[in-house]
Length: 224
Image 1: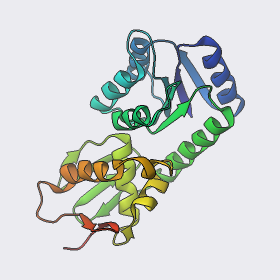
Image 2: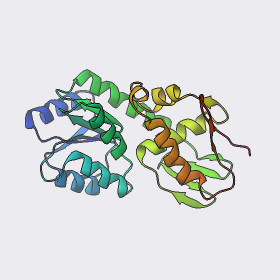
Image 3: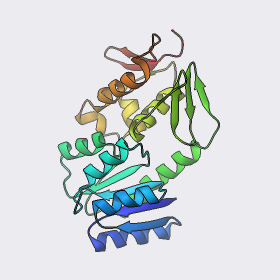
C-alpha cells in the first residue's frame, strides 16, 4: 500500500510514518492542505491520513475537494477535536474514519489492515445485478450504461447491500460493516447515506433497488 500522510505536526507525522513503514507499507509526507491536494493529483495513493487542522487548507476542505474531483481513495482524519459534531462533519465530508489525537498507532495499524483486506477483496471480476454493473477493481459503477460517481463511503455502503441483496439489513448491521459500530448510536447517518444512494441509483429508474422496512431496516431488492 502507498499511503499519504498529510499532518502538520512533524513529530506526529514522523511517528505515523515510522509505524507505517515498519509494517511494510510505503509512506509519503506533506504538511499543508495545498500540498496534500497536489500530491493526490500527482501520485496514486491507497490511503490518505490527513490532519483536520492543516495550514493553507484544512483537512475537511481537502477531503471535500478530493471527493468532488472523483478521488475515491480511503481517508482517515486525525484531530484533537473528538466531539460528535466533528466526527459527523468528517464522515459527511467523505472520510472513512476519524481518529483522535494523540493517534493510537496500534489502532491505526488495525484500520490500515482493514483497508488492505478490503482492497484485496475487491480485486475481482465485474459484478452485475439486474441493470447495475460494478467494476470492483476501479470502483466504478454503471446503471443502464450510465456511469454513477460515488464517494468512497457511498460505494462501500452500496457494495455491502449488493453482497447482501434480498436480505433485510438493520441499521446496526449496516453501521457495524460500513462504519465503526458507534456511528449508529449517535446520528441518523445511515438513513442519510441510503438517501444519497437512492438519489444516485434509483431516482431515474422505475425499478427501485432500495426498500425501507419501517422500524427494521432496508432491503436491496433485485427483482421488482
